[in-house]
Length: 171
Image 1 (cartoon, helix red, strand yellow):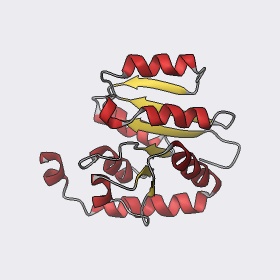
Image 2 (tube, rainbow, N blue to C red):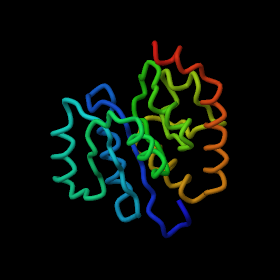
Image 3 (cartoon, rainbow, N blue to C red):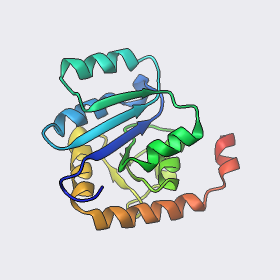
């Protein structure tokens, strides 16, 4: 993200199922309409068709469905070209995708509840209520304060570097 005039790329990676609360992200993109924001949704699941239909019905041409990305290099490339990782699930048991995003240097916006709080805190992520208003405010704040974004990304990388990945992946 290089300045106010550039596009801000949000990314979500995970299953597209009701418990993941991905509909919050569709509402978020509607709330951010008029700004230069794009959302890439990497994943598949039982809600994919409904989410695609909902975006079309709302004329959200700034939401892109990448499907399930199995190739780790391709996922890493997606993360490297994004600005913000959005994780809408307030009841996630752990949340490996946000941790992977932190490791890749992405800032994370996530609910201030659930398993993600075992590694994410106010010092290394934007933890907010799982509401459209709170997510929109966090995304706008990140866009408007690049120095804070860079510092939060640095702290996220530090946090992810302390994780014992074999232990996490066995979970």
